[in-house]
Amino acid sequence: MPLEQWFDAHQYHIEIDIGESAVRTLTLRELEIDLESLPLRYGHHRGHPILRERVAKQYPDLSADDILITNGAAEALFSVAAVCLSPGDHVVVEHPNYPSNYEVPRSLGCDVDLFPLRLEERFEPNLQELESRLRPTTRFVSLTHPNNPTGSVLSQGGLEAVLEMVNRNGSRLVYDETYRDLTYSAAAPPAATLSENAVTIASMSKVYGLPGIRIGWIATRDRELLEAILAAREQVSICNSAIGEAVAVGVLDRRDEIVEETRRCIYDNREIVVKWMALQDQLEWVVPEAGVVCFPRLRPGAVRDPESLYRDLVERWKVFVVPGRCFEQDNSFFRIGFGGDREELEAGLSRLGEALREHAGS
Image (cartoon, one colour):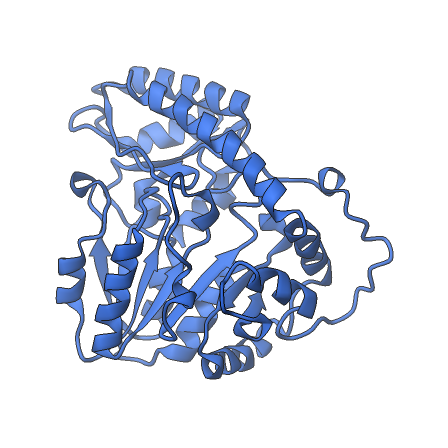
């Protein structure tokens, strides 16, 4: 996966990270969670009952029996695809997106149809175009909103329209809404609460700054599907980390407090990016409506070789951003993340601006 190769090659060797897609990473000391007496045994295969109850509180009319805890959202995406798809199935995947959404169906021999979000359309899903791509063989539609890397959102009306067309087609909606709590306006209801044909995927990684605990989940009313997914993941990971689940319970017990503090920070950080972008003649963008990432594009002729700019940033300027090619996009796009510390963001944007001026027209 080019995205993860880029991360592994560069993220540990830079000084300033403005490419990450999560909020600032938290520590056990900050969380004040006591793990000293935690038994390090195998856990419940569906996830600890208390954790499933805490997660279910986020989904009106769903219970803990409608939740399956996974090793991050990545395992959730993999398991859903592994259970639902067969060679030759048609899958529509929103693009750009986290690569697992299209790479896993490709690996299973599926016909993967990338449904584009376009900067010229403010990265908003064109629902008429989406419907035109559905076929009798379309097994599921995979959307991510709020979107990573563009920061676009799908309204409640839009989500309901997608569910209607998917239900009519006899397909399923796989909906990654990891950033739902970081929507700047009223968020749409969770997809899993609106239809039995919807599978919601989320995690503790992005909003809570806890990618290291590897805790994600699947929420759906389709319990037969959950049983099939459970059977599949038992062949791979059996259960989740006892430590990760304990940390997740402790954080979700303080969910409202932590999310509110996170929102305050990212609202301020987004304004920093907005003001900085207003001064960048070489870039064009769409202001993100949610989440902690945006996807600016180098204007034509601004830089002769975008890849040289990104490599210069990580190697000489020690600043991390993510090239568009990592999302199978035109490499004039790149991802900026603004979920970290304000000082780091300001320093990273300053160095990025200097690098852009150095590479201008080169």
